[in-house]
Length: 421
Image 1: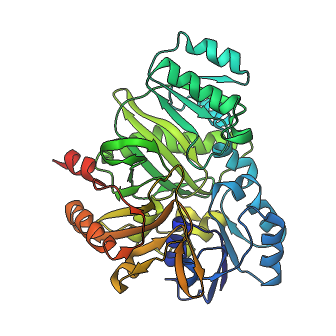
Image 2: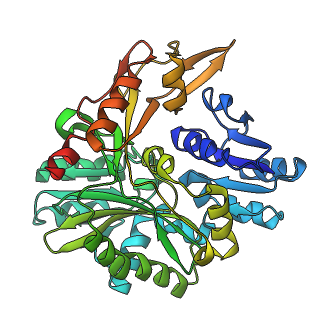
């Protein structure tokens, strides 16, 4: 089989490595891929949002199956374009990807169908948002409506910080059109859980839960990033809570999307807060999370390609989705200065062991040398029988990844360890 994977980050590297395990797979094309992915797939310099070029490439190269991994191409209709050309594809169509593409849509969906989430208000006029903040409970959460590379959510501890966030989004346009509408949301408390789930629009089969570490600094300080590391499973996500989430959140969300004529097929990501009043949805993503994928897929024992095809074909009910009863930890190495300004172009070296366990996110190949080209550069994942051992191994192995200006958090998984104790 000839496969095509749209995207070029650590998540896509993890997906490609997992797909390669299927003996039927002859070649995987990554569009655009990156310098590290080039070791596992054939990279093609077509951007993830160049939908027409992606579809044309798929037809010209007789692709048997495609996977659209990032949010942008999904929201732009990548799956629609490939499907129209007769190329089966994993991922939701554009009318379902709106569940991530518009926070206003997703909040209104939850409100309409009684899916538990934070109280909220929507604004498309800055003055109205600012006057609402004069009396809103603090802390509060300010969210850009559209896609913002995982950075469009500001937790404001003061009224002034909340107003600054609104002005940045609506007046200064720091997130472009994505911030022309904002959601101001009740601040929820409790442990956060990420649950990725396979769905064919009828059945939901959740993957192993995970815990992301969004802040740039140790002890959850600093700015929000796309994620500095993850562990799986999340110790706060007990079987009892999983049952509640299936009944109160997962199945109702799929039913709500069907009722709206927006059947969702692919990977639906549930960002949850386990509040004192029960689990609530913080956000939906219309795709695999990054870096959650880098701990979830290494624990998958069933065949990923078979599961993906069953989501596309509507046969997920008959398809096995099995995960190892082990623990995984992923440690991100980033360029110092991320998520703000940082230097690029530093040579990356890896030991053989590190290369086997590392997914490359932000790197390019020049004359055979891997160079840093992004904020998050690599993610090193270890699997072990205990969480403590997985964390220790992930840090030990990531010591084998070297580049100038490298930065990592030193406390990935420590909150999870405390929860286990």
